Structures are given as C-alpha cells and as structure tokens.
Amino acid sequence: MNVKDKYAIVGVGYTPQGKIPERTTLGFHLEACANAIEDAGLSREDIDGLICYRHFPPSTGEQDATPYLVAQHLGLSPAYMFQDAN
Image 1 (spheres, one colour):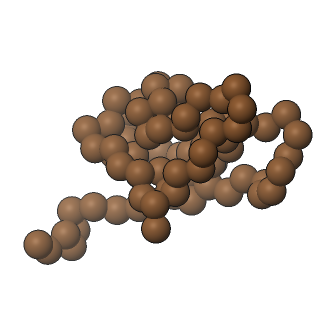
Image 2 (cartoon, helix red, strand yellow):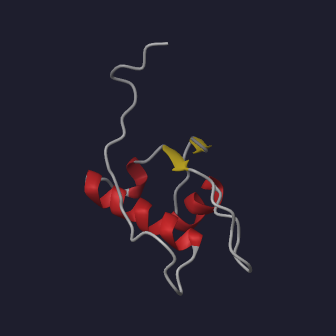
C-alpha cells in the first residue's frame, strides 16, 4: 500500500520524563498531545487520527490511559485510534 501524500505526522510534543510527583500517566499523554497540536499549528478539528506511543501500566488509583480516554479528554473524535507498544 502506498501512503505517500495520504498521511502525515505533523507535530511533536514532549513532556518532562521520569517519576514526577503529582503527575499522572494520563496527564503526560494530554500534555504531549496538546504540545504536538500546538507544534503543528493545528486545531483539534483538524485531527482525524490519534496514535499513542507505548502503553504504560497505570499507577495505583489511576485510570488506564487508552487512546480513547486521551481523545475524550482532548475533545477529539478521531476516525482512527491506535496504541503502539514498540
């Protein structure tokens, strides 16, 4: 399948790394996505897919940070969602 000129990753979002008190797995995902959206110069309405890198087990008392949950918290309705475990 040729995907040339059909798909693009246009923004990158970074977050602090490591064990940071008061930060949740979901919070890191949301910050990274918001930073990537800003980096790309897009609005949320422009986004039709969401790929979350790697699944990290939730800490005690946290929700599992699935692509669906990330999209829901960001106000996105992507047609495509996936989680890459690398």
